Length: 152
Image 1 (cartoon, rainbow, N blue to C red):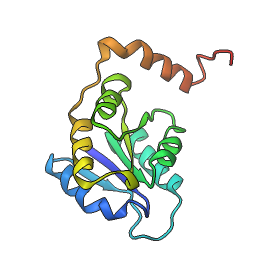
Image 2: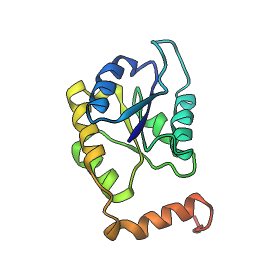
Image 3: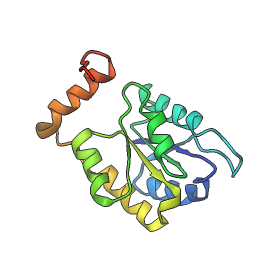
């Protein structure tokens, strides 16, 4: 399993913890992080991680910025990406089980190293419950490709 990791300057201090934990699973990490606390645009990092998944260079992605919101919004603009902002054990599990999220987004301002390890563990151990949620996921994909439009 290959994980594309993208952290901006607000989250780069957690890189060592994340890489060590992911590699502990026996997974490979593609480093798409900023090198230090230099200001970068989180959108550029989200694009790199999304590209890794779309081109099948990575199976999953982990994105972090200050709130996690910017990374999630930017990543979700790319076809095939289902980025979920996670912050609790339950919403992390449901992101994988219900929507087959392939990118977890986390806000560095709101998480401890211990909680982050817990969320990573849940994200990578949870399987998609396809029998229960395939219909909804199919509609998400249709919307993504402009095939299922509703009147607003």
